[in-house]
Image (cartoon, rainbow, N blue to C red; front, side, top):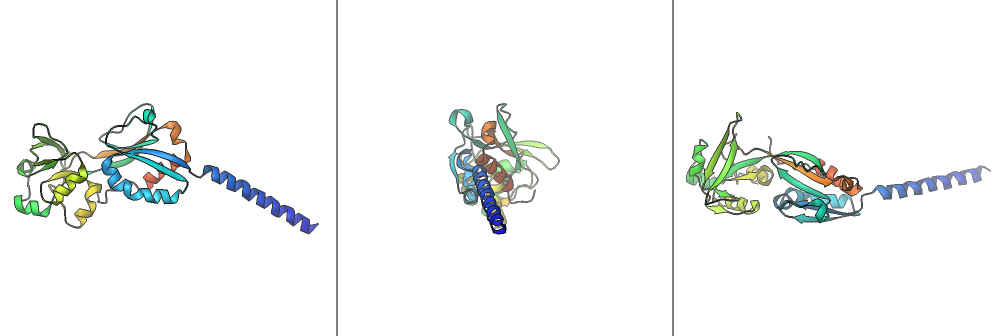
Length: 241
């Protein structure tokens, strides 16, 4: 009787283990997540950590649309759109998850500062060579906030306009001009002294890094894990605030 009883117990344990395995398999993230992501974010921070996410969840596939245009999530079948804006999106129909602030910095190369001197005041900035994302009639504007909250507008005439931040970063590194760049894009170069901060204490207002997604998509295990993963690997700008 004892042997028979042990045999039944073992079979029941096996049945329980099998049921658990089925339940776990059902909650393990699987399927394709469609993500919309701005170019700079994809080329730097997100691009670097996506392989970690995919290695952690072997049943998940990712289809990432890299573009700076604003996507219509529902219309285009996108599960999660990542955004860096001055304010959180208030779209009404979408859920917003805030990952915190990302800072931008005024930076220049050592060779440019040697050539043109360090600016001592905000006014000095307009005499420096600059590079910018956009310009209208040859002029561009930086809105900078000072140490005591004072806000100043700097109008400058960029020598080089390119609507891509990585392209601008290469121009700053090459000594073409001063620019405003996201801190997460220049942390390594600043540690190595290839880029230097200009007028520390003055910077554009920080942006908010956040995700927007339709609520029903947020219930999918793969999407939930992706949002958790982003929180864990917060777009750390690598520099102390």
